[in-house]
Length: 107
Image 1 (tube, rainbow, N blue to C red):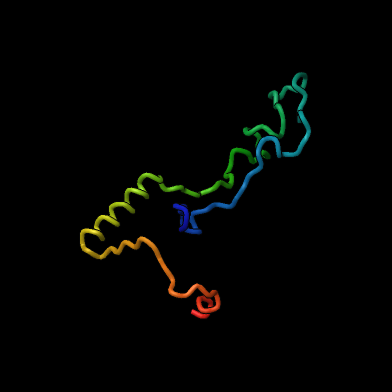
Image 2 (image 1 turned 135 degrees about the vertical axis):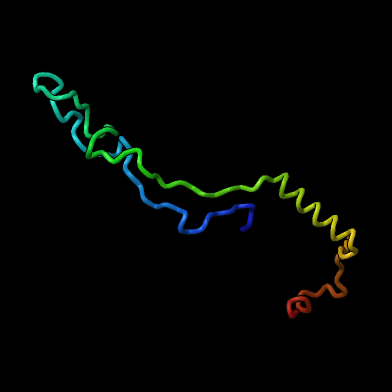
């Protein structure tokens, strides 16, 4: 891919998303803290609650930028190998014999 970006196969990317603690709707407290004989349950939003689906899968970017120094080093190595084999042509300037735009547009 261009720009040194690489992505995994489509089946590797997960698109499921649970709500975060702030996105779960519900009242601030479910049960009174004292006088009920039950445990002190803070809120529906807490991750330990049965109804709260938090800390689950979240969408993320799978983009990976290949290290620039390695990329340039590989290019330098490939060009050096082509030069050693005599398969590399270096061009200083490209000159056109005609300067009319109409003649270059037909090509």
